[in-house]
Amino acid sequence: MKPKIVVFTGAGVSAESGLKTFRDMGGLWHEHRLEDVASPEGWRRDPATVLRFYNERRLGVLAAQPNAAHAAIARLEEKYDVVVITQNIDDLHERAGSSQVLHVHGEILKARSSADQSRVYPMTGALIEIGDLCELGSQLRPDVVWFGENVRHLRESARHFAQADKVLAIGTSLTVWPAAGLVDHARDRAERVFVSPEQQEIPDHYRFLRGTAVEKVPPLVEAWLAQA
Image (spheres, helix red, strand yellow):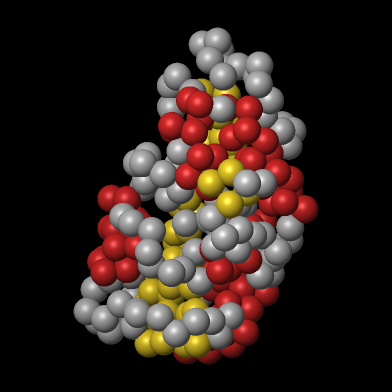
């Protein structure tokens, strides 16, 4: 059996592919508070504005390309059993070649029913418009987790962390809960590395590499592949 690596990624990884983070937006989008375009309450008040916000995000994702960090993470599968657990809603890990990806905050390239969250649809185009309905006759919405909604795959993700021989956390501020708490499920004997361009509080027993994902992840991956 191959040793197991869990890679936990946040917005900092996608930012290096040119995708704006909520922090980059300064809490506002076209004078709308981000809470108003990323919450069930905002959706009920003004679904057209929420759809416009996510349509813009989706076009950005479709135009973006995986960066060197995404590619390096995918290369780990040459010698490791790799599970990527991401807070990001884009598909850049998949496009880089990662085969096991759990999106705890949903996926922007999918739509779902606003009446039944189990009805999820791959998108054939870039936009969701008012009047685009599921088979129940309800408006489609982005298949992403909004403020106040339940994070996905938490139990499965915690299990993967607890089984990992190595854990690599990249580009996350660890301020978005409950997903941020997953890093504490790593077992004591696992090698744990945390990569961030900013000095920040990091979880206990994680080795800190200060720098961007593109700077730090490829050489770390090469070292891990060489020792496998």
